[in-house]
Amino acid sequence: MSKVYPGRNIEFNPESRVVFTSCSLKLTGMADESLFDFLHMEIVSHIYKEQQSSKGEMDNKDRAVCVSVLESMGFRVGQGLIERLTRDSASFKDELDVMKFVCKDFWTKVFRRQVDNLRTNHQGTYVLQDNKFSLLTQLSSGKQYLDQAPKYLAFSCGVVRGALSNLGLDSVVTAEVSVMPSCKFQVVIQKL
Amino acid sequence: MSQMKEEKKMTVHNLYIFDRNGSCLYYNEWNRKKQAGISKDEEFKLMYGMLFSIRSFVSKMSPLDMKEGFLSFQTSKYRLHYYETPSGLRFVMNTDLSVPNARDTLQHIYSNLYVEYIVKNPVCVLGQSLDSELFSSRLDSYIRALPYYSPRAA
Image 1 (tube, rainbow over the protein chains, first blue to last red):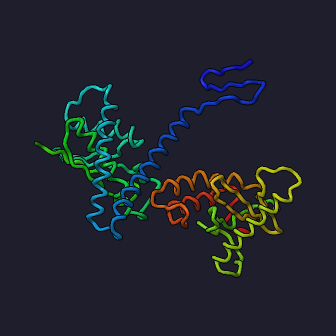
Image 2: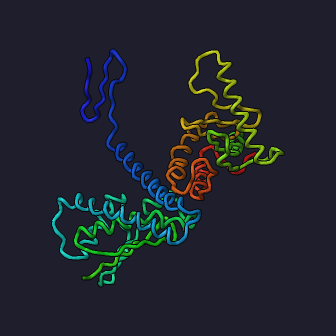
Image 3: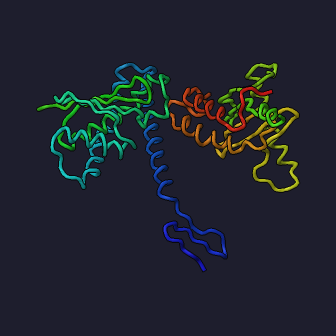
């Protein structure tokens, strides 16, 4: 005779040993995060290796190509993500409302926390500061590997640009890091 | 009085991390009073080679079927603890005799420090020595916070 415990889905069959267990939702959540982190690491590494294999050294032009490839990948991902994340919300009042949504709900879903600081000049330029940017926290907490940080930010810049684009805002998104893992994203809305 | 004396002796001496090919990825010491008298490279090779031999000896001579195998050895002054991960990483820690089992510690170092700050670090190439300062500093804080660590060991 087997018993099913509600909410935990563990079946015990006294004749054989434990037959089936299911992971708790928390465990599945954690596995999903690592999956993206590792995939992103490999995407960056692959793109840089591809660019380098044609010549021996990487010059600035090669690096720019890699960054722009990563950024356009992120763009498409951001477009898709924002459709999915806003399917249940009402439309936005104005540009600032959109940016606040990006800083709170969007950032939480994509980067697992909210933006710490949003500044604007009310003329289309916004600076989003994340003090523990999730793609940089495992790299270092200071100056080590600072020169490598831009490689791991290009995709995220694209994600933000893609999200804004599908919300009706054309923009240019750049990121800068001075002390890891704190990161500033600069969004400049393009007026027609 | 005697309890105070015992507390003084509790400590971690040093830690080695080897990969499955025998290269020493990381080494740090906290309280080592005597060096081996050979170069660091030779010391790492000696440590790895010895562990390799002990493990095969232990499993060969075991009178029973064994799952984990070699765990630790002790001398009159220190105990060496050994932990091997399924991926072939070997954690070796020397502590004083008051620490009976450091397996949990080594397991924590693997899953919460190594996996978090090395495996998830895109710059760290698996198999090369561990340069991440973040890893070093977190490991250092963790060791110093251990209940059996005291900086002034007898």
